Length: 275
Image (cartoon, rainbow, N blue to C red):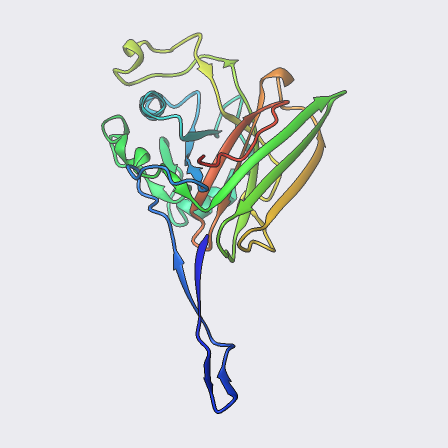
């Protein structure tokens, strides 16, 4: 966060009337999707949470929309949250369901952008909904470093703040990619094949390393860097540890994601700072 300080001192008759009053003008960067990158700020990514199931024949509509988003930007972070009678069902979905649909059943497909924004139906023709939530300039950055050895995962989530924040929460997911399992398909997407026998399921949520609604963050002030460390055994739900990946994102008081980052296992990331 860039700050401009104006100090006003009035001196008369040898008396210093005021030198303690400080007027602070805070200049925030343009975070809109088409704003040019400004040196010193962070890349802004959109979080896509896809509530899905291998049994859900209409869920391929959202999957296809995600494919289209990924063809148009490298700033999308995707999580597939399986539920129902599904080999990849995530048991801890209830808090999320109660957050996004507190008085309604979770009738799939359901998708959310930055956790709380409804993706306009039909999603494949409304990819701009997701693209509009990306950008080149934000004041919150994330970077992850991880290692997997001898059945143990060590993960550092680094967060840096360029303005004063409050009421933030960190969510960290463990995902698995390259899971091959038949996918029902009642749509015309993917050549209208039903089922898609060799469908590759990616970004599948396997474990939440924090509370799924987020752990409170403290000390989120301008110029600070915070690191949260996680150590855990590889979850028994994971089929192939070499296909593990991670997602970290930070939410505000409205539960919306402010920025997100994905990372492969054994990757050491730097903050995505504009040169």
